[in-house]
Length: 393
Image (cartoon, rainbow, N blue to C red; front, side, top):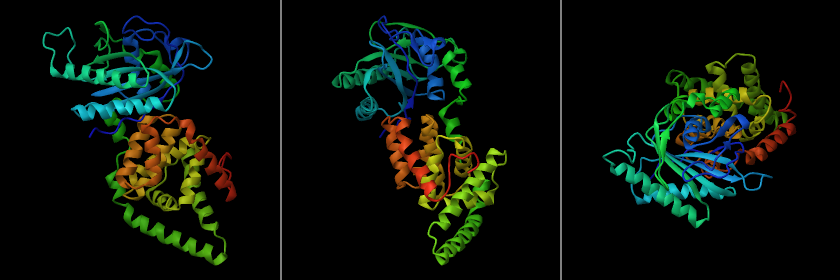
């Protein structure tokens, strides 16, 4: 079995036109006139910025769609990374089927492929190893699979790594190669930084960013027990008062208070994190919190979900990691969403919402499709008398 594909990253329109063989469908612009990518080297140097991290041993797929209102032009719609380290025909078939499923989500007009593998050997090398033939087999299988859906593979290249002055070479059509410019100087990278999107050195760095803090987690069982007892008292009080919404309203306000604290510059202590974790056990509270994305409190809420993901034991960690994945997904950070949802499903493999979000990511569902979840959350909050859009909920 192959490892899961990296969740696709949805990007802004680009404008490829005519290209020589194995050049880009050229003049690809990702966010404006200063971000044109005019050859494969520039495109390859921009891949880390588009993914959010530097890929290794990966097949990176860029899906192009027709640009709205621009006849004859295309737009970069989705960028996705898939693991290369599972050999064999079955694994190759799964890989190319995943690409096809991403393309099927939209109206793809072409696909670009990049293989990043430190074991690769360029065609000009005297000893072309099995690894290079394996890469060409993957590209041939991908081209054949896309052809079944009448989607052209417009370009395919390989590199040993992405970095300044490193070589790239073509895997389709006439042999062509060159050197990559410095990814740090790419206008795409600059635009990503200016927009506040983090650049990670590797996927491992991304995984480590949500890893459990064992010292904090080990303090949690006792604190969770105390928070559970306090929550049970509030639930009993709600039952005595005949107010079924009393408990959920109080639990929601407890979570929102911690978000307000973060906006004021104060991270929750361990006891407060335990209280939030117990509040999230109420499905109605959890679902309401989808309504914070996007919005004025989205950044602080995502910080809270991250702190919880790093602090909680299983299975409570699943709820927090799912919310972190949802928040990242909603703002277009597919890589972070992917590792967060993977953490959620490791904590609780049967978690329904984490599974649904993960399926959406793996099949290229655009973040805009999450809007209904957010709207439903805000409506449910309003039913409890809470306005999630207010400056101080």
